[in-house]
Image 1: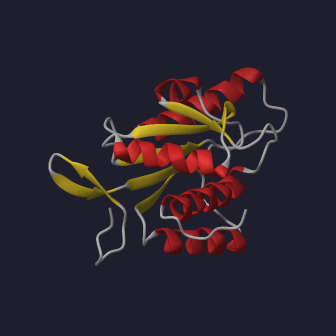
Image 2 (image 1 turned 180 degrees about the vertical axis):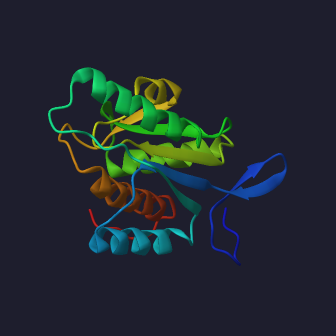
Length: 178
């Protein structure tokens, strides 16, 4: 169902309509202008469908040739920061190489299905260069993988936003590139 004024998809919850809120919780700031421009563009496009917020937490400097222990400590610190931003009532989707693979239409169906189940807040979580801590992965309601390949975490924000945008085009039966 659509609100004709805002054109945002709305879901019925407790006898009132609500708009989906999606957060992208991520480690580190985007330094490259071309990534920031792409993120801004997809954020603008998504604003007609959802309430979007990008939540950044500080990253830790990883020394070259860091030991497994040091890397685990870094992931724990970054994970603790991420967990402090995750809401109790949110459906949490962590991006992880060993997560579930979806096609674009399957992701759209999943997001739409969450809304139909009265879930109004989704938080996607993107880790830093070392990935996510076990504690963050444990908190996730779902682990999502875009590929078995490793991508820079800055680029994953752009890819994720594009796929969320594509999902809402599909959900609203609007044209999208196949």
